[in-house]
Length: 298
Image 1 (tube, rainbow, N blue to C red):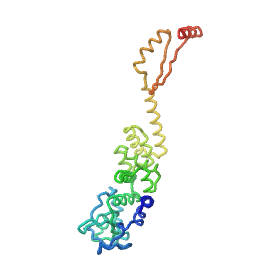
Image 2: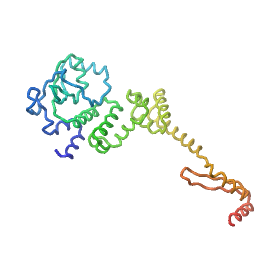
Image 3: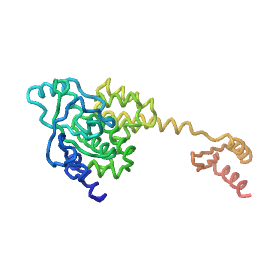
């Protein structure tokens, strides 16, 4: 399989990763590991399954996990998990952590599984891409999964966009969440604020202001539009304060006094942070203007 074909498959998600597999990624029957049998599902003992070290999910909602466990008790596990062969009759979970936990809770001792032979790189991609496409992921889990794909699979944002089938701007917005203070990240994770709120909060330049705005959003149950208006006001106030703080450098004071003394009038000098500015010379009347002009003209 050449590289462009593989990227195209990854862009369609985990199903494409599995269906567009090379011979080394085919399903293997548990009772005959040396023989490749496409389309077969084996049964694997739960005690032989090890956790996925690259598992992207950190939170599993207890009520939904219990509901899934009860469903498995009544009907069995309908959707097989995916594992890979490691050594000594052991398997490592690729995807299906929630199903595995619910099955253990339901008292099962073995599970239907697709057994695949994949390397670490493929396993990371499969686990993360499958996880990203879950509907019940919170925004922080998505953001962390994107960052892990970038770091551990050495992807650019453009390559990641192609692999997960999302616009680059969407990915950028999720990655910005990781730069927010921990209190705001927890609010996003716990769904106290939405992705829209978090995007606006991330636009504030100061950590304290970000935390303060997050607190106000939660306490006052502000809508995204109201949060945007409040953030704009905070930014405008900050801009005014910054402008007010920009004074004339001390090195300008002596020349200003000298010029004022020479022209015998009030002088104002304005200067921005880039060094650009202007000199304002005051005069009382037309005769005073002519006097000042004559001095300057000499």
